[in-house]
Image (tube, rainbow, N blue to C red; front, side, top):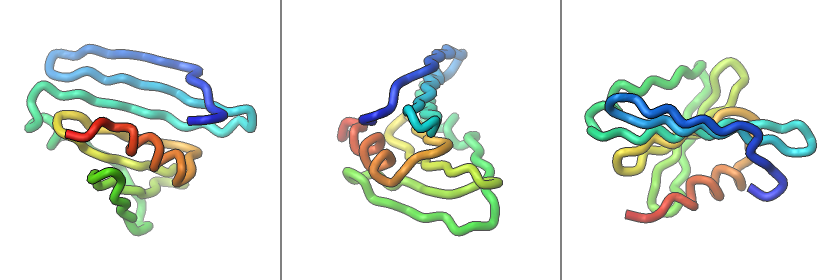
Length: 108
C-alpha cells in the first residue's frame, strides 16, 4: 500500500503448502503482517485456525470475495480464502488497506 514498505519477507515451503510472510511498516511506525498460505490440496485449509475474542465478526465483499474482519486481544485480523490460498492481514491496518490488498487478488 502507498506509504508502506516491506521490511521483512519470508517464504517457507512445506510438504503440502507454502507460506509467504510479509511485514509492512510506514513512517508513523504502523505495521501489519500479510500471510499468504498456498495449499496443494484445498482440504488442508480446513485445519487453519484463527483465534478471536468475543467482539463480532464483520464481513466485507471485495471483488467477489468475502473478507472476515475480527479482533483477538486488541489485534485486528482480516482473512479471505480464494481458491487454494488463504490471505490474512494482522496488525495496524485501515479499511482502504484491506480493500486494496484483497481487491488485488486476481479474479478466478
